[in-house]
Image 1 (tube, rainbow, N blue to C red):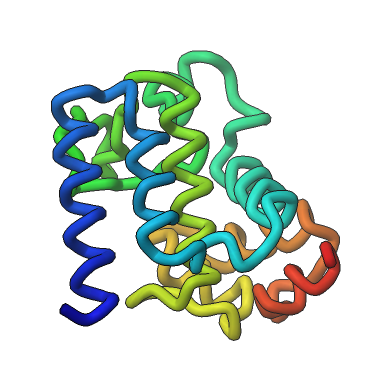
Image 2: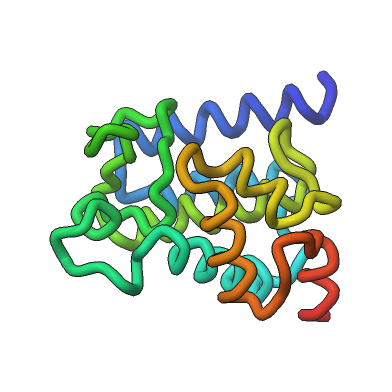
Length: 166
């Protein structure tokens, strides 16, 4: 069995477990990371945290009140995780996570995928290119907000952001 098939199988098992035990979502993500041979942790946690916080900023997590969609959904990244059995909210179908911690874990997992070379992301992408994949609305505004929160420009590549944290 090739490594990608093994990773997908472990991810599927982890997500099934999360369905049965939603509080275990963070464990499911850690299981996937371990199965990937640490591929998702090829960058430091501080890089993942910085980008996750920048995305949360762009999504209005820090500027909006408790009645905003990100807060009501426990979803700082406004993720649309259609593969999870959680409810949706808003016109975009934002996933409602059971806890804020699970929402943060899902966002950090998404950011880690940006560095592992997923089907949608790779470390050579600029913030503007990530924006085109990540959000469906106000792509340039989102890219500018993420870049500003990181102190870079939208044409800065993820790998260059990671290099700043070494």
